[in-house]
Amino acid sequence: MTAGVLLLLLIVSTAIGGPQDAAPKTTELEGAWEAEMMENDGQVNLPPSGTMRLTFRGSTVTLRGFLGRQDVDGTFTLDTAQKPKRLDITVPGKSGTTNIAAIYSIEASKLLFAFPRPKAQGPPSFERPVNADTVLITLRKLPS
Image (cartoon, rainbow, N blue to C red; front, side, top):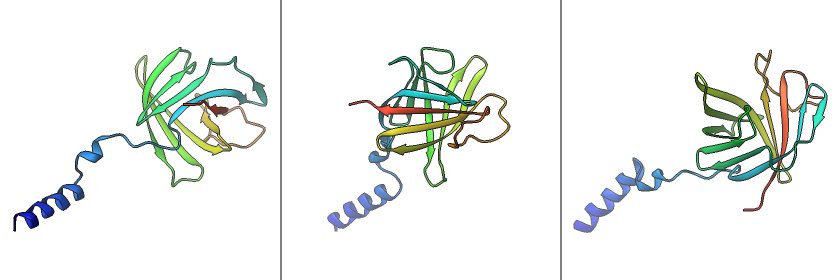
């Protein structure tokens, strides 16, 4: 009877979320990504090596060289059911938090990351040439 009670407690504990839920889940974005190219309004820029980087760990992200600052730590959520996939980043700003509603795609170890410019008139897209409302950054995965 004691074994049956212990088994029942284990099943209930797992069903309502046991200790395994405390660890952050890894995603396909896990790791460091370095910018190779940035496109906006028909212009292509090649950022100097190491100046723009996204690093994903669990549910946190570090943005290097974005938002006019060297390093900014924030959190992110993914919606992989959407087409294209959505990546929402929240970082501390000068007056509260800044939210970046982006889309992303991974193709052959390259991360395409598109987000709207401030005061954009529509959602970001991967269409080329990139319009004035969207910033499209191509990043490569760095070795672990």
